[in-house]
Image (cartoon, rainbow, N blue to C red; front, side):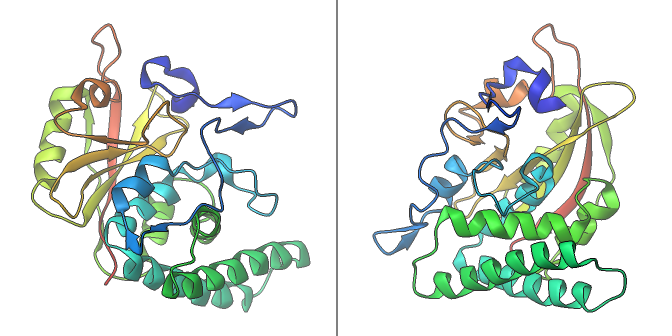
Length: 265
């Protein structure tokens, strides 16, 4: 996978005794999202990765697309996250009311549903934590089917409403991605989910976000554990961002845009 075979990306995940990847910089999941009564999207994205140690979130390894989508809504503020959370609860209810749901799946999905509903309430009284966000990411991944294909990306992006437009541009390397950065510049609260590939077969893509935050700063967000910040900003972090699209020897990496998203309102 991209995140495990590209040392130039400063990924620092560790594998525990059970062979499970962990985030050595995760910190306390019960740390508050609101600090001093305020929502700092930059601080949240700088820290939030897709790996956690919560037993009842069971899709950590596969939920890069869910995090890439969630990153855009985080830049929209707590109201955007509440809209997505409430929409996810309704979507889980609808899915569980349909046929073919095993009792095991129902039990796991209800755990996610109830935790996401609690997140919505905790956002109102500003007691929400990174623990709560992990459940929302897991819920989005569950609703999308757990595999980051263009169609499942679109299914996840639909949750919460707002702009969710399929994008299917494929390119290679650092120079060609500049047009995508130009597309997202000067559009605060918007982002593009981009799938990165490491081989010609385009197997096992890893999703990242190219976005424009509320201050107009263009960024790349990567949910796989990185040394330091998960959010890289242009132009100051361009040397690190370039590594996502070009090997150290200058060979271009293949990428594909998947979805254009705006923070839910």
